[in-house]
Image 1: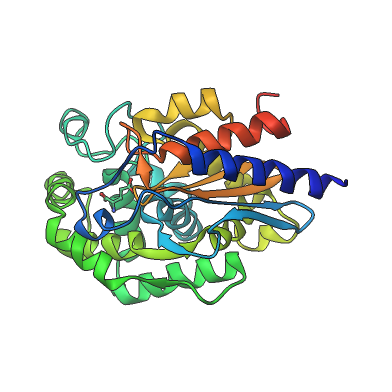
Image 2 (image 1 turned 180 degrees about the vertical axis):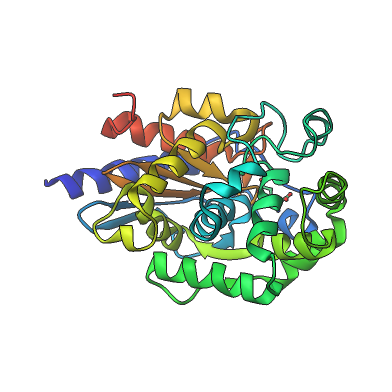
Length: 307
Ligand code: GLU
């Protein structure tokens, strides 16, 4: 059996193990539309540097990418603003929950990093400046479609509306940053754009395809430069799983970004872009089986960046 056959066998084994897993975590219920999703789903997709894309499970079922979208908006914001973005948001792990308000108070409205909600709101606010939400969302979709090589990627308006109706904490974060002059658009406009960006739906296969620029795939530098890709990966490693980032680095050993829809995008630099989806979350709001599945994949392949 060749290398790809071996990899497919590893994926199939992980898929079978995850189907049997007794503890699947808890589906997010603070966004009512997400609470309707079953915890039985599982999918994994691996796109390798030589152009193959292998999958197991329901890899062609679309799910809400939620905070995985923050990786793509960060790439867009860095492309538009360059290092100026870092005057408004930091690059340190927060050690706190994804939607925490307390740190913002003691740190004068400057969020710790672009992947906690406050930081992602600043990133979206920066892209929005001087433009309309629909133009920004059009750019996000164009970026995703080009990165994935697939035009069938859309926003689920019911999920966006559901979050809009219940997004009091995100609005609180936005207003707090506006009070510190770290939000340039009206809070409801920035939050509305952010809720729609989080409501993008993709399949696991599409997400792995869209992450290829982060593994340094041939030709990917046209989307984002290698120097920037390195930095985005560093932030994913240190901040991509909220207050579970250290644990993810310890167990998996790859840069990754999770979303409360149960998706994770992880990157094995130079080797593979990996996406996984299982809606049940652990205590830190990261996919329980998604984490376990990538942990088993890196153990089987030796892809941890730590050797
Ligand atoms: N839209 C979600 C929120 O802002 C994203 C959180 C996540 O996926 O971790 O609450």
